[in-house]
Image 1 (spheres, rainbow, N blue to C red):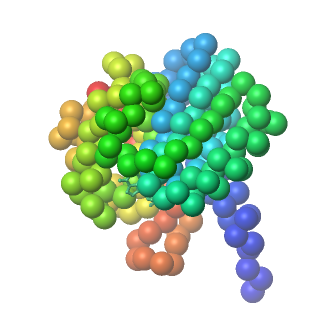
Image 2 (spheres, rainbow, N blue to C red; image 1 turned 60 degrees about the horizontal axis):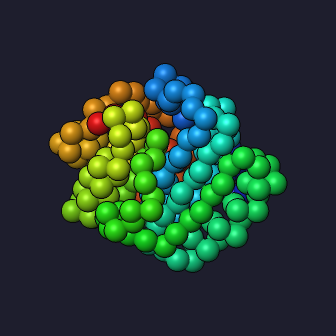
Length: 200
Ligand SMILES: C[S@@+](CC[C@H](N)C(=O)[O-])C[C@H]1O[C@@H](n2cnc3c(N)ncnc32)[C@H](O)[C@@H]1O
């Protein structure tokens, strides 16, 4: 049987993510002149084009700030997305920096994002660090701010949700992705299997 090229699989994942994020955000994200999104632990930020498209539907201009501890991935994200967004979505800027999400308090210049986003949050890998990431992300938001997570695993999603609620977050929406692409590197793992949206 012929294998589907990885680029096609990725494209399918992103199309599904776009549809699910639109459904999740739509009731909660008001239109605004300018929107800002903080993509925490973003890795290469493959979903940046999807996020830019969704923000463009709700605003005249937007800024996407990405952050991860892995410098090589951040370099890739900057090389790809600064150019691509400038060509496709001229009113949307982006910037990716190498920084710890659990040291967000050191980054005053990031300000108050409208949305804090964590795709494939990794709570169970290091609960104390991710509790700090969640806590400092929530601290950044104002009363209208939204925090969105996606998760690979059922149990990790439950644990992350419980941790966020313990920090005072209120879950206002969630989606289980029935077409989530299964990954073979760990049992029960699949792409953007769960999505959830929180307010403070
Ligand atoms: C499961 S990966 C998800 C990456 C990306 N969001 C995605 O969906 O492909 C978890 C990410 O968390 C990042 N990470 C781990 N600890 C971190 C920390 N303390 N601060 C910022 N990023 C961190 C890793 O480098 C990795 O990119």
